[in-house]
Length: 269
Image 1 (tube, rainbow, N blue to C red):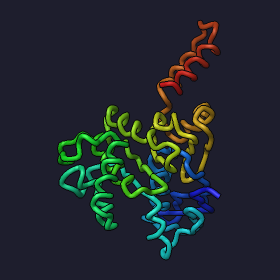
Image 2 (image 1 turned 30 degrees about the vertical axis):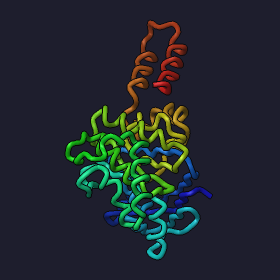
Image 3 (image 1 turned 45 degrees about the vertical axis):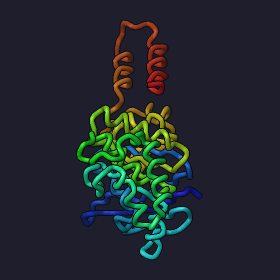
Image 4 (image 1 turned 180 degrees about the vertical axis):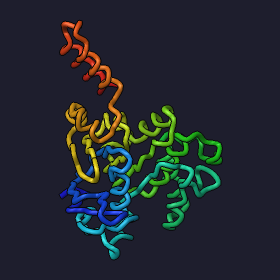
């Protein structure tokens, strides 16, 4: 059994319009899984259902073998941490250090232990030199790394990133993704996004369209299903667009070789 098991899950905001449509999914412990989908695909709704911010109308969710319910939700939330898309909405401290420590203070962690933990997670996300800074002085990418550190501080088994880079510039996206790479296979990571680039180094890519899984595979194979990606209204990678141009060029004699080189380079970026 996976650390997250979803069985026959259904959810609607409006009667007769399913956002999650009889979804079945298993997430293995320690895996890095990216769920791709366009706006309205159900991906962010799924994240909220998993952490109990929304209640399933039909179906079941199991976290580490325990069914998510009103009776178990508090205990199960201790196993999960979620980072949302707007880092500004997650800040509660006057300094970066205070913000990272907030969850630990609420759990009455001893001061020395808390101090060591704050420094440990700050190093993981590359923010150890910003601990005395006011969050308002930080860039978007730096703020999101602080938000990530705040979640890591209480050591959840499952890390959920709900469009965590969607409001960031390219530099910020790179900073956050580098921090996430440090956690690969140390946590179960579930990243919700519409950006294919963020799925390049995942163990597994799941594509949602209209609340259903339409593709589930490793990135190298998943991205070859270009039609499915386009049908899900996802913007394909620039390298994939270049491969399409090569395919259309009638003057090239070694198109297949060029296509394969471009394909391999896509996963070495």
